[in-house]
Length: 56
Image 1 (cartoon, rainbow, N blue to C red):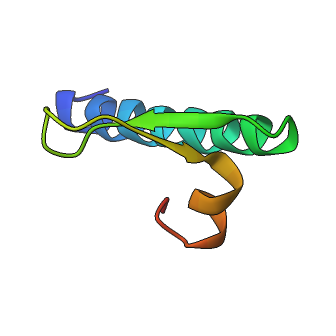
Image 2 (cartoon, rainbow, N blue to C red):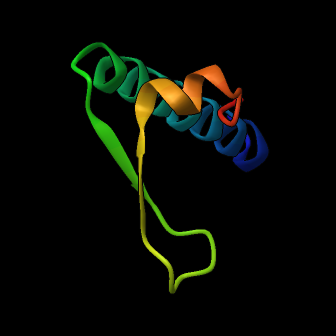
């Protein structure tokens, strides 16, 4: 397996894990913590993130 193939598999695995985590948090009614600029911290309901399609 080349480095490029490994990197692609790793990236897709991390994306899948993130989606699963988000769905589990939404099912439990939990929030996620985000910081887009590295300064401002926000709590957003996981269900809102899923509904607004902010996660790909």
